[in-house]
Image (cartoon, rainbow over the protein chains, first blue to last red):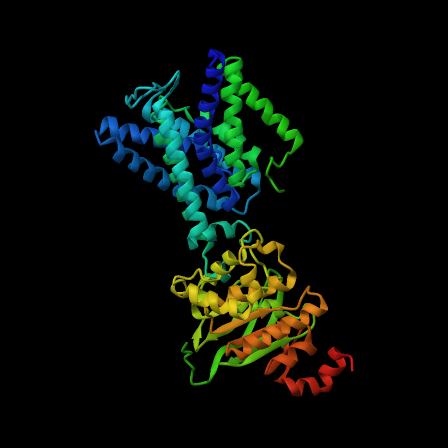
Length: 288
Length: 244
């Protein structure tokens, strides 16, 4: 095989791995939007909180890594519930712009609070893995783990949403909120469960990101906008659309970066996004 | 299934119920009762307050005065999502299926109550025996069903909770005449199965052929009541609603 082809193949495969992670990120945001009809602009800042939590549990308190991660997931799930009860609930009936502003406000609040509490220096949990080499292609182990766990997490969410009564109610409520009480469903309870699940997905994402990236108060900006763009591109609230869009986006980043420079990968991906918005403003699989 | 019967014999009883929406009263001092095993209709023209009546029984809107009793117990403090646990299931106006869920998933939502879940399979079988068409289409997305099939699915969904009392809101509305006929056949079968039914309809001639008794509701007030045959024969109904 030509050297060029191997590097291309490597970027396609790396794009696939990145796609899995981005798909997980977009799932939580899409789920919350699909059910509650509010966009958690501060979604990636919940991930940042999870990353700091894991850092403190593991490095500072010396807990085992997996326990620290499980605690991180629970903590961010709880943060999702707190966010819903104290920030989203009061504005549920408000104009969408106000809902955006209030969750946007939480974004800046969390960033500033993290800067005050943890300082601006980069932190790392210091866990390293050797790269995996197959033939002439090498993969980073954390990326492979992230891909596998993200897929498993998404499968678990899919099974929950399709097989359980609660999951079916979560899908139903996004279609007709007003008649849910006739089914014996308390919409407030569904919203809390959805917020906890959205938070848990952000927590799971922080477990995967903490293996690959340094932690700092602005880390959310590296993932927040891109997650939002993927959701919009797939059709906001459309979980399957977001899943596919994540993989397309990741290929643009990875393969685009291969042909030019890494930074150009993002530029190409965003250009593609803008083109899609002209073509289908509601997203590729959006239905409004 | 055991249905406790109160001393009065009334399963559902409304005592002087007034209700409405912000700045608009839709029901004035409405009293009626439905006995166990009975099928009762509330008939009346469009805008008489029939849907409001069912919505207030299901607690989807609040009651400003009066009392609603189910098996002798007040529904005053019961939140909307707990009314179904008291044995009252409603088939809402316009069917209101979850359009992007399958037939089977819509029926599953009807069995959402924790108490209904252990009997899900048994009741699903019962619903499919009533409506074999639904079994044929169980994986189909509800939004793609014909309107008659959607009405079957909506009724089936309500039956999945194993209700004591079934509330039907304008089951014939928006259906083609030929389908209307079959929907009333369905309602007849539901009544024959022993369900207690309260049905709200503007299709007066048809519904009076199906139910035991009826109340006439006009501009939010009960204007008359009686056995179906009596009402069909009464001048008041014949002149105003049957055009005879």
